[in-house]
Image 1 (tube, rainbow, N blue to C red):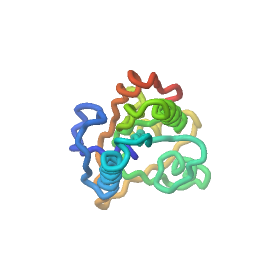
Image 2: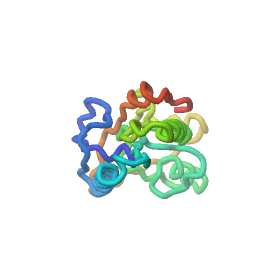
Image 3: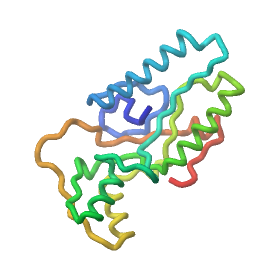
Image 4: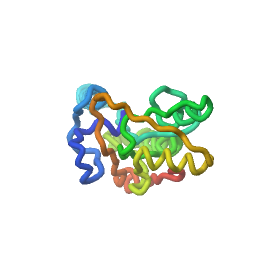
Length: 186
């Protein structure tokens, strides 16, 4: 599902591990936690005694080619540049685990190979960047502006927006140690 499946009090005192409490203070996060609970219930009810292996994977904020969705940081930055528009950012101080899409994808493939041969891998897995890659939205914007040598006008809404956790980080030690996975591009 997503790094947002964890119950996040916003303290950011440590990165989330796979057995941390699930939950959400906003509807999107709650929906991700629900998806995790449904996955676990199916695994325990139907798949724990047969040859079907079911695992759950949780990635950080993935970036990379092909993503042109609305309200996604990189596509929004590119659109603002191309159309000379103001970049609207909900919270430029939010910390997120940014990672190239190919890094978690590599982890998913490693996990699928392990699951094919051994059902003991049928559990939850985090695939996130090393902690040094968790940066604020503003850090990312500033890096892009420096790289492209072009300034953007940035606007943050003054009206109250729905709650979003200010800090999200993932601990991927389990995937590193048990799968031999490491992020290469993030």
